[in-house]
Image (cartoon, rainbow over all chains, first blue to last red; front, side):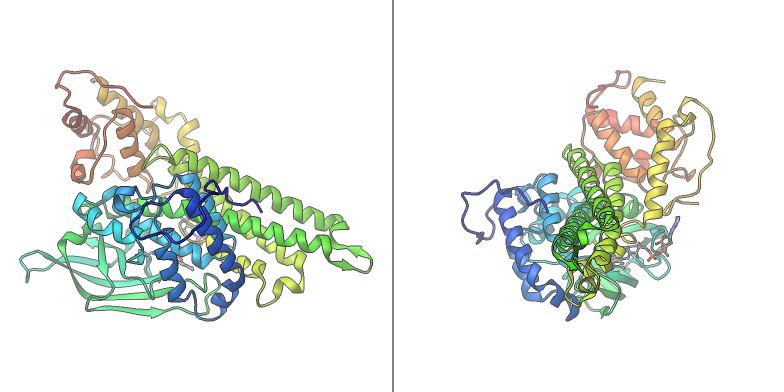
Length: 415
Length: 89
Ligand SMILES: Cc1cc2nc3c(=O)[nH]c(=O)nc-3n(C[C@H](O)[C@H](O)[C@H](O)COP(=O)(O)OP(=O)(O)OC[C@H]3O[C@@H](n4cnc5c(N)ncnc54)[C@H](O)[C@@H]3O)c2cc1C
């Protein structure tokens, strides 16, 4: 599996003093150490109640979280490609840990883009410094792919002369929801989509940890209830009406980017495990790798992984142009990488046989986690709708004046 | 139609796959998908070499091509009759 380039090879310490900007080379080294640790411990986290708080805090203190934020907000100003490589490195070992990076990055990206200067100055350094763990709370029982139908209410409180908001609703499947300090919550304000930051410690916030789900078992997932939770109005992010299209849209775009790279890491790890096993394992006198059918599985997985990496790289390059760039490239990369991870992990388990079914099998864990990647941040089918929509736009004749509107409505669209 | 507005209606017509006139309220008409709003912001930023801040974002300033034109003029300080600063991509 390709390794993260270690450009800062002269740096010998991973003890980054808090508040000091770090070089991407240093962060690559931190990520490599973290990945090595996860290589040994991830299956334990997967089986025993999740990523321990101590590890989460260690990661937070290392400067890896939201490291693509500009230095003035406490980030390392990491180039998308460097962020991608780091995410792949970690995702190749543990999706729960990668999920921590993903969620923190999503909330930070949304605030960087659509927070006021005061909000950015208040929240971003605490997210980048790891003082706060963020959660992203969009999904509800009745609103998954189509987030436009969320029912969580965000209302002005008459009591406090409209300086407070009251948040009421139920959110599901919040990654790190069991331990996060602050949630970016999608709701409706006077019927219009709105996003608000809700601190976990406020009265009326309840968490119900989720255990035993198919994948991402280490990711401290929780369902959340907000029962008339009062927050200062200054925690509203962007004006009501823009909470979904702009705030959540930006968060999901960033999430798709790190999920894509995480899946690249998973797909590559599966190729490594399957090929290693096929090279050394013999049945009778014949190494598994001498069977043409096994070679076919290996070859296809390797090509899928390499293709996913190139699409993720292309997305990273497009994103380097600045916020808002590379949205469609990222969507395509996430789609391809989730498919590569799902197919590659399935075939890796196949080649590994019973070893692939063992409780501590990395391929088995990736197999379960990769299926989840085909559902979150836009299910595969939803990604296909968007990808095809952009093809029709590019090649269609509507731009030349034919007034047609013939396409299925996409999730989140207004009727 | 001035040049700024025609660039904007050109983008909108291509993105929404239907002819968009300067006063069409395309959000209300429901033709925008969930990625479109961000693509529109990015288009306006790079085509007119400006940055859209959250303070600029009330729903109305992006509601029609003519509104976007007004917004671009305000941000770039271009006079009413001026031609576009067609910079960026
Ligand atoms: C492990 C895990 C972690 C998660 N973490 C978070 C989190 O941190 N924050 C958060 O807010 N949410 C989170 N989610 C929720 C996740 O984002 C949703 O599961 C996802 O958006 C899909 O929504 P849904 O489950 O309601 O499925 P539905 O929207 O009901 O869709 C079910 C299936 O129907 C198909 N489908 C849906 N729409 C279409 C369409 N338009 N065209 C064709 N087919 C379609 C797809 O195959 C899809 O998989 C998490 C989920 C999981 C499993």
